Amino acid sequence: MPWWKWISPLPLDELSFLYFLRTIPLDREGAHQFNRHFGVTRNPTLVTVGAEEVVETIAGAFTTSVMIMHVRDPKHHKGIGLFKLNIELSSCRIPVRFVSHMMKEFSNGAAADGGNGQALYNPLVGNLILDAFTTEVGAEAIFQKHGLLGVVALTNGEVRGQTLRASDRSPAFMAKLGFDKQLNDDLRTRLTGSFRNQGSAANGTLYSGDRADSRYYYVLENTASTEAANFTSGMINPAFTDKVNAVMVNPFIKFRGGNRHA
Image (cartoon, rainbow, N blue to C red):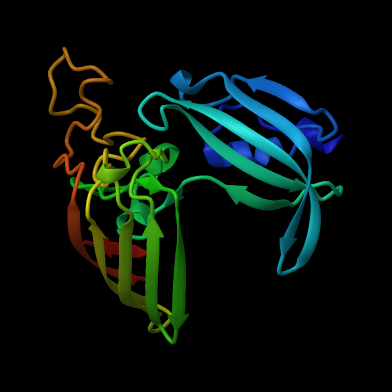
């Protein structure tokens, strides 16, 4: 049976979509429309296949086809989120480069949240009441040695990469120091401290950037609640949209199969 016959017909999230894009014929330049996103309001998803592009990497130069995925996002990105993917033209169809907003390296909590479709497997469901999660345009450098880790990052400070009202915008600087090590076969420990500084923003979303919304399923709301009006139900959004100085400490212990976060 041809390999493409094994493609699942089930709805896709953004990460699954990246694998799905590898199945699109690369010789068909133009626009392709799909109603496969698990979020109904994000359909249809538009994918454009562009011309070839050579990407230089440490492993060498790769001739790729450029794909751009346009995802409807009513709450962010002025309604449309863009993902650019360079896929190698060989039969392996290796994803060579992926360009989009990055999850800023401030909180460790994002690595432990439910992740939409995996929420049912998370015994704490939402994990966080104050959720420091957002995506921004930027760059980061990570250093690790003998269990010690350090991260420095610089971003545009907003989920929307606009240049209007320049006097109201400034970059965001982040730094993280920590220790993360598997001490023995049963015990792993991690302790990190993070700092973020931003002088000003037109619309900062440090504590309101989670697109998955609340994972507490309106248990604190009455029957008149709606997805649009109560999407952060059970969470705290301090509405820090301008100047922000934030500090976070994240301890973590894993003994055998059990995790403990704070």
